[in-house]
Length: 186
Image 1 (cartoon, rainbow, N blue to C red):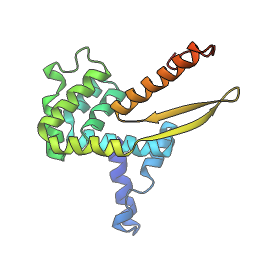
Image 2 (image 1 turned 45 degrees about the vertical axis):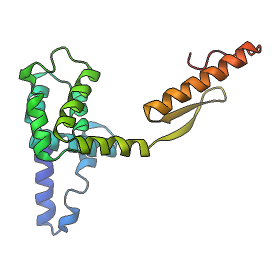
Image 3 (image 1 turned 90 degrees about the vertical axis):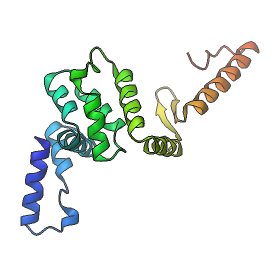
Image 4 (image 1 turned 120 degrees about the vertical axis):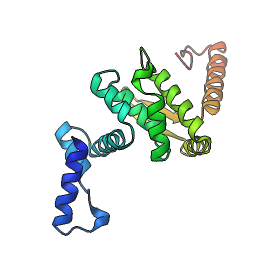
């Protein structure tokens, strides 16, 4: 439905004389409005729909049949995002619902299966994606009630484990010296 709407909007925009580079502008925002979502999420939903319709017909069929929910379908699309259309279609066929891949599968198993299939198709792209993800690491701080704050870190797994260990050691040291604060990871 979203893909058909996108095509219709692009056709109308082209007929109205909009430059080719701007065709499709605002479609994601309209989808977001219809679904009561943010404009950014509307764009992601449109991208999901396009990927399913054009490159991942098996995942789309599994979604339509109720074998996958929208979130798990999104995970499949996300894990194959860096692949060429041909490779993405091949991963979709490999993971097709009729092969039993999704029977009783949770999020982690679906992500692992998609990553493994994507890696078999194009290891270089998957490796580059992981490198890019590491470059996007960051720490953020946001307020919490009672003069507290939330600290969130997006880190490569090894660095995250090391950070957790260092914080736990520090909290243990403080507790051993009489500080009544709870453990770092409780």
